Image (cartoon, rainbow, N blue to C red; front, top):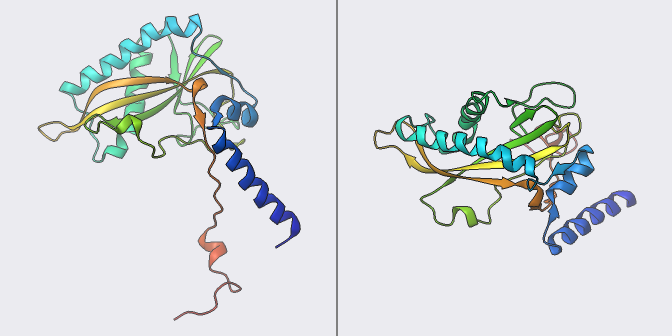
Length: 219
């Protein structure tokens, strides 16, 4: 292994350890470093006034699910199914323009953070979706990974300063007729206050794995 490679690995491990010991790093600092854009605190008077509109739409989505359960086969598909529902509920107010944010190259991309952007003249609200199981009392206090951000500049969907909110809907499982999932409540998170951790991962693919040099025997 080259000397510079050894130094790089050690640096990554050292910085990862430092972040863990500090109790994480602000997500807003990560976004600023990667994209050059600012995450604005949701404590502003602007966002508080707009929450009056948004919270009514979130309540409406929960209420609608009681009579029209969200039709997905598996619970891990629930978050994706909620995206168009939330987008339509926000756009029906005619107060905002809610859509999928474009990448830095101007392309539409469904994967990656964040899911939607709400545009209001010169103001922008980025929105990410999550779900959790209301039947599990430890769901919101679980230590399992539930949020991640992969820093890529060309495919970054954060091209403007704005508010970054995470809307998490709590579900109570499938309805009695097994049509779909029923929601029960929701939580809205200001991501400017959230700290994240870094988990280094060295990975490869089959093309690099199964080469003439690396394969030493086969049957």
